[in-house]
Each structure stands twice: as structure tokens, then as C-alpha cells.
Length: 430
Image 1 (cartoon, rainbow, N blue to C red):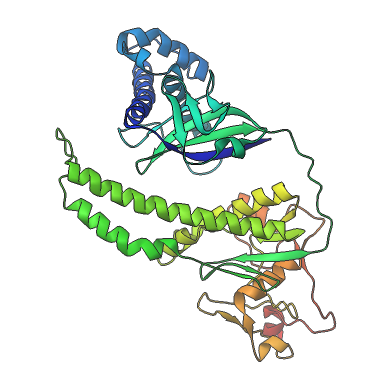
Image 2: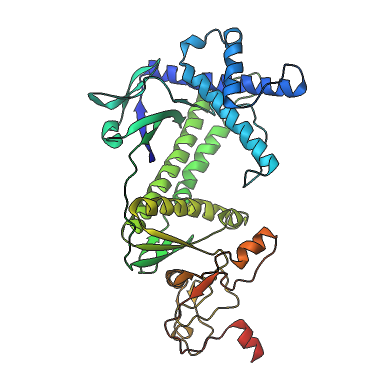
């Protein structure tokens, strides 16, 4: 089993200069090999393969001529740049041929200075230092102090890879650690919970637990706007002219605000996911089209700030870690439009309606109503996958069609089977 451990580094001024030199070496190798690939496509040089081994062979042949100073940095920095280019070319080819799913991947572009400050170690003597728990060993750089006990976090794992990166002027080391495959027993209890993700509240659970949305971006938006205005008034980079030092300091302030916002959001999301997976035996999530929700210009900022896609991914990871059973409801399952009391499905429910009122006059929720998010969470709790696994919605999406929100391949359990269910079709017939 592979797990990631990320720690913050505390390099000296000399070590920070060497870290920047290694990151620049990786960028140089990436840009040079990309230019060579373009030249081979244009017929100016002899063609060669685009695999990682072939690109590395070509780089080693050209390195003495184009980079005579390469001995100042570790060879792993140049190998990392070549590896990134090989992965980028492969992703572009797979996307063009249809093997890669998702958005279209464009042809690789040249990397700019101070924007891709990253390199990695995969071979050699790197990683933990015996007897020095708050330090890491980086070839060609030496011992680099860390802000936390990295030996305690790694424990009995084996470090396979170390990626060093710079974010907002701070250096971090991400360790890929290999652990023995644990035997995690799958929970067999009946403690099921439905989780409804949203913008007003980050997560609403069917047991009544509500996780408020901190709205980190909106809280720091005023500070970010002021810092951005301050940076725009400075002398920035222009063709043939370097930016001023005051512009660099203002840019660092903007980056720190953005990094703080992202860190706080990530902390809340992973703690919430751990709480949900640890305290329940079965978790039911909804399959949200977050990318489609971001296309709405009225909701894109709020949806991005809530990071519902990241929360869904975090819940999946934590459920696998704690042995919790995870069920993902069909995307077209009408959890918000269905009454959790009698099973009646509303014909229309706008986003402005925060209180769910049932259309069935005999239902209890038709008179007093109930919270919309909690009602959806209760419906997700009662969600069960039918034996016919494919689903009409999945086939319709592959064919480019749209299905009505009738529940897809789900079966909804109603608390009172004797209650008459009044749907839109029954209403029209009457």
C-alpha cells in the first residue's frame, strides 16, 4: 500500500538557492527536450521515440554539449523533467486517440521560470536520516531541516520517492511511502448514513449532523482583492525587463493568501471525511456533476469554494481506509425532489426553496415542511442498488441523451407502504 507524507522544509539560504537550481535544471531539461521533439516533428533532427527511456537516452547524449554545468545538480532533477515530458506526451497521444477519458489534453508547452518549481528523487541515497527525526537527506544539497517529526509520520514504511516543490515561497517535501498491505475488515453493521453535499452547508447527514461551510475563499476575498490591486500597481515583468522587487514581494503576498485559503479548505474537508467514515458502517453519497455546476456563472464561485468534488474523493479514500462500505447513488436519482416520508416525487424544485413541502396532501411534510438538505440525506440513506446494475441513465449519457429524474436504477424504501403515492403523472391523470 502506498501513502503520501508531506512535510514543510526549513532550508538555509544556501540550501534554498540549491533547491531553486535543481528546480531550474528540471525545467531546462523539460524545455530542451520539448524543443527537440518539435524539431523532430518538423524534420530538422533525426526522429526518435517519445517514451521515457528513449527521451532519457537522447538527453544523456545531448547533455554534455547543452548543459556543461549539469554536474552542479543531481541527475535526478534532469530525469524528473524528462519524465514529466514523457507523461505529458503520452497523455496528449491518449487523449487524441480516445484512450484517455476526460477533458481534451493539449500538446505540452514550455515551462516558465518561477512557475514550475519542482523536482523529485527516485534513486540514490535520499529520505530519512537515522538518529535525526526532523531532517531529510537530499543528494547534492545535504541535510535539510524539517518543521515536524518526519520519522514519526513515516513510521515503519519505506520511502520510494521524494518530490520537492515550492508553494508561495515555502518548500515542501512529499514522500511516497510503501507500507505492508493491511488487513482491514469490512464493517458489517447497520449504521447507515446518507450524506448530502451542498453550498449552504458543506455536508448534511441523515442523523441530523450538519457540517457548516466555512467559505474560506469568501472570507479572504477582501484581502486577496487588496493584495492583487497592490501588485497591479507595481512594475511587473515586461518583454526584455525583469519585474521590480516590490512587485515580487506583492506577488508573494497574493500567493500566501491563496495558499492559506487552499490549506484551510483542505484541512476541513479531510477532517470531515474522516469523521464520516470513522463513525458509520455504510455511507451513501450522490454522484454530483461538479464540473457542470461550475459552468453556471451565478454559482461557480460558491461551488468552487465548497470543493464538493474534493470532499467526495476524500470520503472515498477514508472509507477504504476504515473499511466503511461506500455506495454512490445514481446521478439522476431525485434525492432532493423525493419526499422521505411518503416517497412522492415533486415535479419541480428550485434552488431557492430551502424547505421541502410535499405535494401529497395526506403527508405530514405537506403542512409543516422539512429542511431540504436533511430530506435529501434521508433519501440517500434509504437508497439501494437494484439487481439491474447498468442503469438507464448511464446508457443515456453514453448515447448523448437525457433521461427524466425518475430514480434510475434505485429503489426507494417508503416508511409507510400503505400511503398513496402521488406523482406528477397521477396528478395529470386526475
